[in-house]
Length: 390
Image 1 (cartoon, helix red, strand yellow):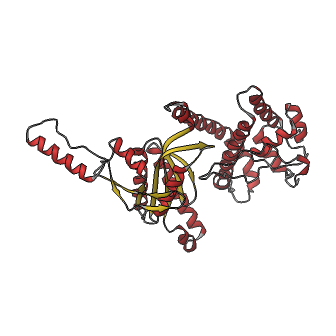
Image 2: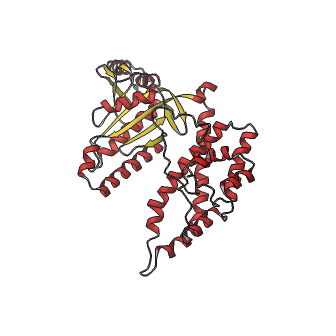
Image 3: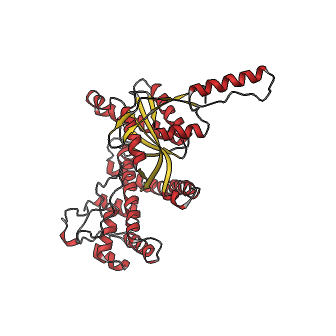
């Protein structure tokens, strides 16, 4: 079975529900026949750990699953239709049996099982493509003159496969533990589904002009550096990278203070790199819907709009985010309040009050002009800046 180029449809609106009625198997265009290349077949057997034994119909029947449901599972995982070619293995039968078993046991509904297949397929398809394009391709350069890539590929995959598999399972378990921990700490059952998060977009300024000026290789290196730096900073400071979009990254954090630190660190990091263009960031705080690893809702839309109107090398936040920073003591309600508190603390010290201390705010907020934002009405952005040292 081959894999097609299924990509995530994640964005600011949730994806539609999976179709309940898939195209009948006999009506599809059966052009995605499995390869007959000897090396490709040997590599497939090595990776899958089994030989081709079943047609799709035989695999479905052996798994005890209807052909209609099997087709929907396979398409959700991103596999192309292969007609009735004998290209499936015991692993394909086992996967069908497991998914169907979860539905039969009542642990998952059928639409949820299809979503599990879809999210797993989309994520692992991207991972596999990246590993082949950026990793294996470089490593399989013939180490000696006269050797072909074909002679190098099989033994290399044979050595790497078990290590990569163990590492993948380890990372997945770690991520699953972290995600489960965040969910069970929610205040109530409703918040476990629709959560209050800080959501931010970071966008490279003038990226379109760069695409016309830079060579493809240079542009690719710039994007990779931006995505790598962003991913490292978001993770290091307690946020979660939701997705990257070339010249833009979407991140989320459980609290406003974490999101503020990430945003300012991103701008500071890009400013230290002479090659990088300026960055602008927009953040909003509120209820979001999470689905298939993405986030949706008005809060996400607002963060996107704030990013589009933010000055370069600046962070714009919405009123709810500003209120949350003030509530947690990370920022004063106003600079006038901060100055008044400092003056009061100084007066108390002069009067001999040993406990007098100036509140140490991490961030400052400056109200900007109210403005209409397409689809969201009139908003009052706030300019976020660092106060003192963190």
